[in-house]
Length: 178
Ligand SMILES: O=P(O)(O)OC[C@H]1O[C@H](OP(=O)(O)OP(=O)(O)O)[C@H](O)[C@@H]1O
Ligand SMILES: Nc1ncnc2[nH]cnc12
Image (cartoon, rainbow, N blue to C red):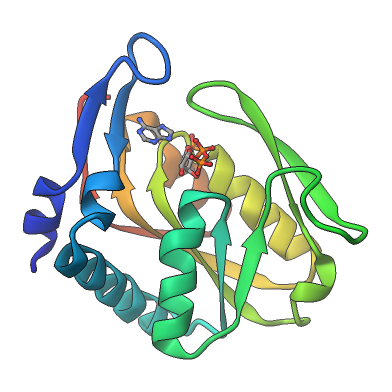
């Protein structure tokens, strides 16, 4: 399945979770077995090209694709979690979302010093989530310089924000006009 065919599997829901947001919903993409498999294969090929030694995924939608890519490549998976979920002393970063604010945390021991960690998430909008993840992974000693997404919303400037932090961004598809 091509990236263009995968794009047809993403559902757009207007005004969710608040008025004015065009929600690009991956539920329909992952609900298609061939679509899910093709998405994971394409992301895994990009992660391999980026020299990934580990994959990091952000709770919750980043876990779906990130863990699958890690399995496909036989690499470790690092869980970037929402606050209060990890049972150990964490490091954390607060960040702004397209809608609201949040915080992400990791177990610093999940990262090896100098390890090249490639970030995988379903979607980049403002880039706040991905940038917070890059900061966290770098604080823990990782080389975090590649981030892969299923969907980029280029109008929200996330890829530029990551570029300014020396992170190369790639996405399988874009939705404009958000
Ligand atoms: O580029 P940004 O503006 O930071 O937005 C993108 C993030 O927003 C969504 O996650 P959300 O925080 O809604 O959580 P979820 O995965 O638990 O649904 C999405 O899965 C990305 O992680
Ligand atoms: N427009 C959007 N659609 C789906 N997930 C998102 N996360 C942030 N913005 C989003």
